[in-house]
Image (cartoon, rainbow, N blue to C red):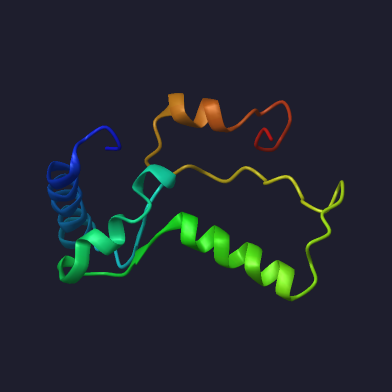
Length: 107
């Protein structure tokens, strides 16, 4: 969607979002990737459900860590993500995301 110009991008997103809300019962939309950052502002009053911008979330999380004095990151402070079933996920995508030999997602 990032290569789609302005108005077309917004229209495509609105169509897809409407399908997710009406057909799948989605209650919140989380944008995936920085390429879609700011799109929730473009949506204006067209939003039927809340839309989350991942870049704004990341910045807020970083600010919170600094304000709480949690800005020291050291080796081993993050646990590996354990594998969970991938619902309606094509096997090709799951194969990229999960290495069964390691029992966790690659980092």
